[in-house]
Image (cartoon, rainbow, N blue to C red; front, side):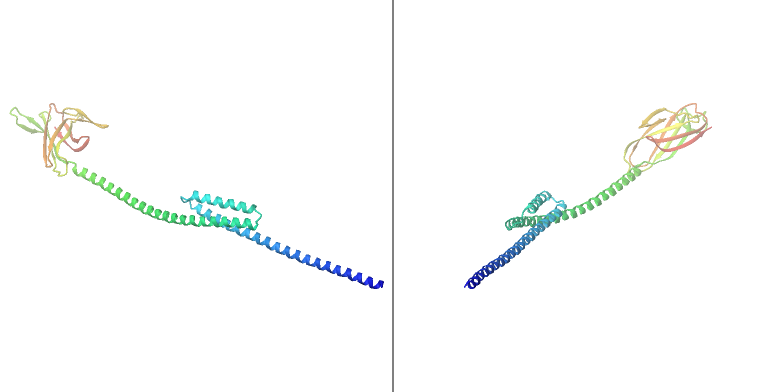
Length: 294
């Protein structure tokens, strides 16, 4: 009888222990499964967080490149980039829960749409700037060509002006000076003797010139005797820094045709020797000659 009771109690104990064992095994299984699921969720959330961070970093890189283009939109691009940087900072500090990741992903999508819009505007500006640069280069070429052409014209005009000035210069030729003795009757007799001479006759020809200016022309005539004395008026004319002592001035009405000029320089007690005669147009020597009195 006692053996039967012992066997019954043992069976009960074994049944209870079996139930406890089964319960423990089930708990361990569930705990393991839950832990595995949690690890999966954590890994998934971490991956999602890293993906969002990666997308945000790419967004920032795109803005950096666009800002480097230095367009007129730089200020707006910088402001949008700051929004991306702030979102990256917030995301890095977050726990990366599903709710947080969903919020940050939505904010990223909004920033992505804004960036796409700005990038399209940047591309339009870049094309416009390229067109402006091309047009500016073309304009520079045209301006440079015009500048060179103008220089050429100015050079040609200067040369033409010099040519005209040179061509309009009057030419003096046939400058001659002879001594004469004037008789009481008024007749003039040529002489080579200094003691007999009382007039020096200076003559020259102004050549015909169709492009020269017409009107009165003045020439300064300088006669220097053998003792280096200027004869006649001995007056002095000043031209800028230069001065000229002359014997007389002759004024001619020039009409583009050849003109013969003859002037008398009266005197007495002419010295023997060689005389020098110079004709000046203002301070420019235009003709010279010499003669000798015995």
